[in-house]
Image 1 (spheres, chains in turn brown, orange):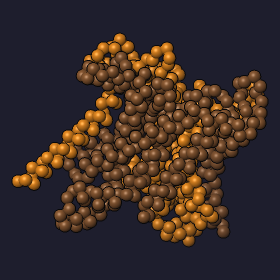
Image 2 (image 1 turned 180 degrees about the vertical axis):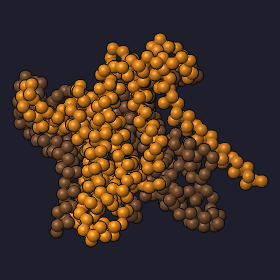
Image 3 (image 1 turned 90 degrees about the vertical axis):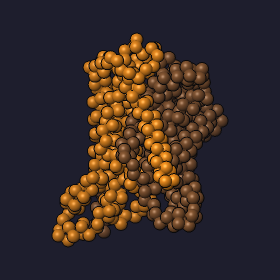
Image 4 (image 1 turned 30 degrees about the vertical axis):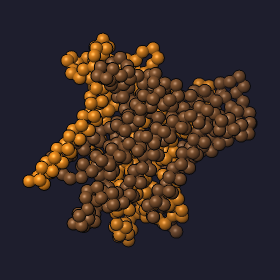
Length: 290
Length: 287
């Protein structure tokens, strides 16, 4: 009995901080979400308006558009990262001179501040002195300008994310691959399986748990991406073509000081993300058990 | 003979791929370094990778700037404060979760993961209201609130770093045999002695990794710092974003600031590389 109490005492400081900064704001916002409240309007009063904020939100084209951009961005980036990362991890499996050098350099983007990654890619793609538009224009006579072409801007943020996060997939896949038992592969080799068959029927099923974990973490982080896109496309431009839900809240909703509406949107975003994540988590663990 | 050719070819393939990957990784960072070494006039020549003359003013202008110095100081204070706080709290919490029979402890453990999954953008307005409306005391000049304070940032980074630290440390503390604690308790040790004399030394490498990674995450954070500070507690990442303005960006100085932001990250890659995988997957994948 005495020991249980000590346990709760040790846990208490962490729980209190997580509760105060992580949960209390959302309880408060749940309340504010039912009001019409703008600190900088003529009447600074809170007026109760029921579920009006939420009703407005469901039909807000900007909000829905931002969600769609976020989903598309996460999909293209994560699929590419998984394929490239798996391939690179395969190439790192056996030893060769210089392996640890290549591996270390490959890790660098993971630790760079996302905002600095945005800055790096801005400098690469900026019309005028950026090398990418310059070379594309010179070699292929192709006009590349992420400032006014929506498709190219979207492509740029996906490529930037691939550059940033593929090392994460490579390293985790490599850790997973090196931990696999070698016997099934050797047995298949003796039985005359070719390398594609070994990959498809032995390595891939063995790797399933690691692949699913990586997929889960990457999707979860992809949905949260704000900093680097905000920096690269200057707040989701051109138009709304690269404006993810995070950027929408940060650049459009937050400065409007419409606290009631913003609260409703924050809460709905949080709710949607958590539901999506748990849905993903549950379906992934179901696949794993099968 | 045939096998040998295949072997050579496959090695050659590996090298070609990895040399390309290395160039693709390094070149963008190097390009930023090149920009940071050029004056405004030089920028608009055709892009070339050779640094013929190093324009140091981009760096000196920034380093001797009072505002930038205070941003840098804030970043150091906030990340260090947060990393130390998070590691200390996580050590106590994981010890409790690992050694005590607490009701619903698995639920607590998974709830912390939910907090880590939450998109930071959803926290902007809630935390802004919390810091300016709820934790606000006094009126007028004597008014005090958590908005635009270093302690405010230190506390709010716990939302993301504390769950991460708890998940990472859980595996490490679970790996320390319970028999060691029990032997110490039999000899009359108190809980605080067990944590300080047994757990702390044995978990030291894990604690160091937690400390370093939390530090980097706090150092790299931009979104929340940009909305929850105004002037006094601004960090270096928000300073970097401030360079991009409508009237014209000084790209050289921006690149210089970004290079300075990179330095700690590069040091971390050099030292903590081995633990990165376990750290970034919350201990789900080990290497």
